[in-house]
Image 1 (cartoon, rainbow, N blue to C red):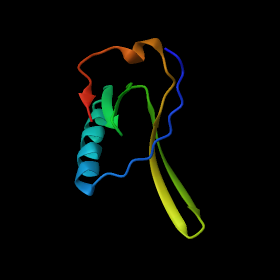
Image 2: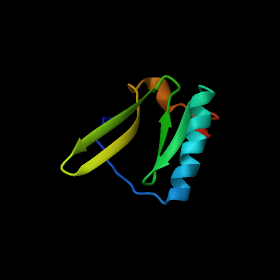
Image 3: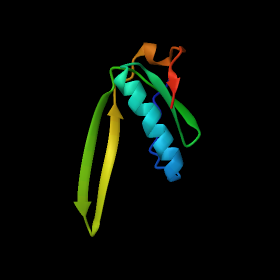
Image 4: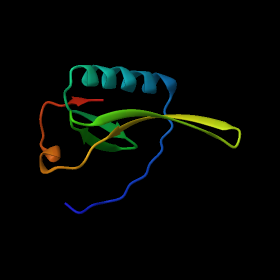
Length: 85
């Protein structure tokens, strides 16, 4: 699979964000891989993903980002019973 660059920011309704965060928290707590759909693409997040929170401030704005980061490995594409978030 060729490397593809993608940088997407999608605004969701509050109810949708709440539902995604709840399911994400459940998957993190159970230390299991899961899938999340963002802007029409389903992404598999392995259980080894690292979670971080960033805070940025500047030009009269503040931003908080919740991030999951991992390196891509061959087994990341395996289908399974991953929870869809």
